[in-house]
Figure 1 (cartoon, rainbow, N blue to C red):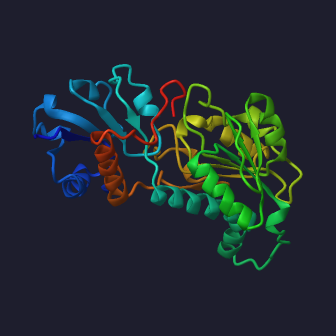
Figure 2 (figure 1 turned 180 degrees about the vertical axis):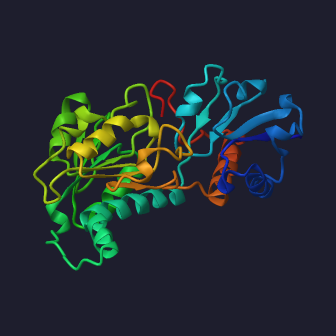
Length: 321
């Protein structure tokens, strides 16, 4: 019996998102079915039952009349949710240990960077200045994590083990050992008042767009050893008000930021973020998707679906994640 084709709709612009690279991996793990990049027009759209996608063009998925499942190859699904022509079929998000571990590495690295005063120390090195400052213990700081899904949960557990006080905020109630959890709009301010280093791992939805703004920053704790709060955004660029971030860095509302995501990517060369002394900038690689792990994950999900088992990690269209 002929099996439905898997179409690859991948538009990333970097080596990691090369359609050729992903095709090689899917050819190996889905050897029993045709796999073709949609850009090559290598097959009949009516034969496509599955689509593995990253930033597909609006309307692109609507060209497959017999589509059964969409697999989003990255963590964020906001671009798909914005496509008004998106077929009404199950949408599966990525959930693999490799991606989770990479995000936890990033969060831990940047929390430690700000905790251990690396911006000051690196500036001292450039100035050939031997002037160490008092270094507080991890337990003197509270790290607040916005978004307590798989990524936020793992990062929180590692930071607790390192000795930080950790609080978390999510839309719905959560329970994590060693973490004081807040939820909903009514508990957001209490969460912010406790937070010295704010880590954003939120999905981008209509409710969270622009949530990282001056009003929110002004509610963060200002009595920590760092002197001013720090934000780390490894979620989505649409979460942050970039003009507010720059203004708050300049007037002292924020002490420093680490940013991995931006409104426009690649980040334009004239962005002030490139040269601001209080900005640590990374090129949206906090948790780069691994083609080996993700392709195996998609193949397992297809096998489950075709054997009558339920798909895992389905996106709820109503919530947008």
